[in-house]
Length: 196
Figure 1 (cartoon, rainbow, N blue to C red):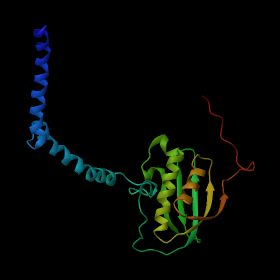
Figure 2 (cartoon, rainbow, N blue to C red):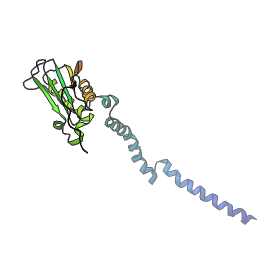
Figure 3 (tube, helix red, strand yellow):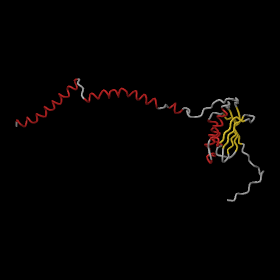
Figure 4 (cartoon, rainbow, N blue to C red):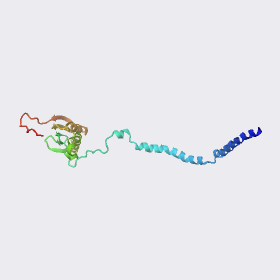
């Protein structure tokens, strides 16, 4: 029976030896795990700097809601005419949209069309093309000091409303809107019917 008691006593001694081996590391002799700890501590110390750098790269809400940096700015023309008010003539046909801005006497200040802006074919007749046309013509007029326009719309095209909205959105003050679409009163003989 004394031999049976000695066998369990042997594992206890091994545990004590393991505890003694761990004691010098705790006292000040660094082990391999302890040597890796200072690098981890340095990474934790650099974490606030990394967070600051990441937050600096993220745009704020004010920057996101601000003006588009890629948008074209209105630049004062070299020989500016300094005309404050004028007339914006919008011709919206089924195939194209043209915007012409003149002074009160009818002298041309700025103009644009869907083809000039860069649209081709069936895309010239879209509402988006009319919006771009109106913005282009308005920038030309605003470079000469234009601030207020009277709008005259002609034609049945899809770009009527979008061109007016674009003129208002770019910053021109709209004093009045007139529809100048010509309407026949049984004046001319109609064209012969198409044979399809």
